[in-house]
Length: 268
Image (cartoon, rainbow, N blue to C red):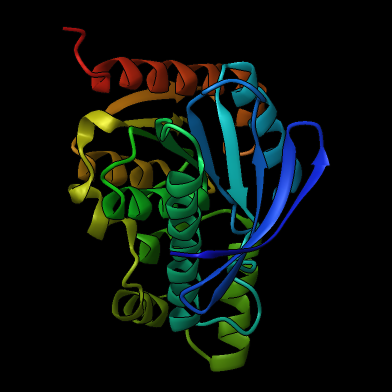
């Protein structure tokens, strides 16, 4: 059980804290509505940043009647100095941070409200692995994400990915074929390995039709591996999907609402 080392109110209904456990320090934020028992969504951080996006997602989910919590990201992904084993360790620690937060939430929140998880982009990959480890999550939403990372790296239009590939070429004199082999060997936390362990009915997957950061083939592979769950397609690219921000989160909230009804105990 993680230990709470700090917990400070930052504004009405908002707290920041730090959990210590399993050799990790987990910085997190909690946003709750006083006096109400509301379900709670754990927002999985985007590994490349996105603090403002996390704040906007949290605000929108609260407007739908959900409290929220989220960890600070462990570190950036695909940075100079990282190789295959470093990326897998980053995934492992990120999943661990979410699990430590979930364990604390289950122990500390009164009357154990329903818990959900929502991840976007790389956070969606982490959410896939998290959902496999946490079958008690009432529902999960995986947005603008995909699987088969070794191929995704080779075809993504994301500048960070392209810069990382160029750094590996300059530093290690290795190209895409070597990177595929390295990631195949090192990435234990490839989402396609874990997707079949996630109950299909728990999942909503959001797909961006014109995404080149997470190519359509990678999005489809994750959808297939999850058992073809409910899927929402938006006619945008990866970043232009921000234009459908409200539509996506409305669909996420509706999916979570339906899951709450599905898992609610029968009335005698």
